[in-house]
Length: 238
Ligand code: SF4
Image (cartoon, rainbow, N blue to C red; front, side, top):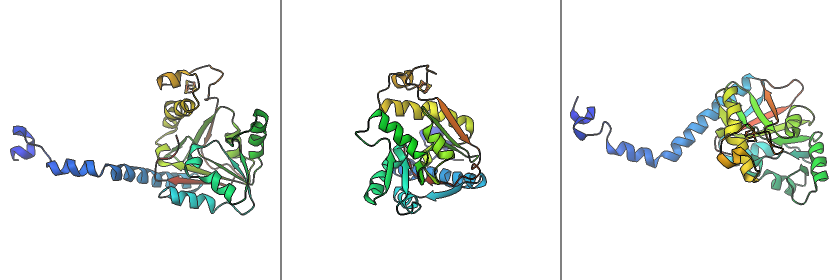
C-alpha cells in the first residue's frame, strides 16, 4: 500500500476530487435518501393494508391527491402544513368544493369548532401524520383529537400526504419525533409559552397550552376505512 493510500505521510486516503464531488452532489445525496426511505415506507404500508402511493415530488403529490377527490365532494382539511405547502386548499376552492378548513381566516372560536365537527362527516378528509414507521404504522398526536377521529372513522375517504422526512424506523422513534420535532416547531410557529418552545426540548409540560394530549397509532388500516397514504420523496411539513 502506498503512503497516499494508507493516509500516512500527510496524504489523503481518497483523492481530493472525491470530496469536491460529494459536496457538489449533496442535494442529490439527500434526495436519494428521502426517495429510498419513501419507497420503503410505501412497501411497509402496503403490508399493513393501506393504499400506499409513492409521489416523487410535490407536483406529483398534488396530482395524486386531487385526482382522488370527486367533483362536488365536501372536503375536510386538517390543520396540516403539508397540505398548505402543496397548495391543496386553494386549488380545491378554485375547483368549487365545499371546504371545511378550520385554519380559514376570520373564523370565531364557535365557527372553528363547528368546522372541526363538520370534518368528521365530510366526503373526503385530507390530512398528514406526524410519523410513518418502517413497520407500516401511522402515528399522530393532537391537542384536541379531531384529526385523529376523522382519520379513523367518519369521512367517506381519507387521504394522507406525508413527506419522507417523517419516516422513522420504529414506533418508539415516531413518538420521540413528535416531542423532539413536531410539537416544538408547531408550537413555536404560534408562539406558545411552553418549555419546548423556549428550549427546543420537550419538558413534559402540564401547561394549558400543551399540544401532546392524544396520540393515535394505526398499526394496520382500520376495518371499513378507506385510507390512501401518499408518501412524497421530499421534505414536507413539520
Ligand atoms: S409535552 Fe409539552 S413541552 Fe413536551 S413537546 Fe408536548 S407541548 Fe412541548
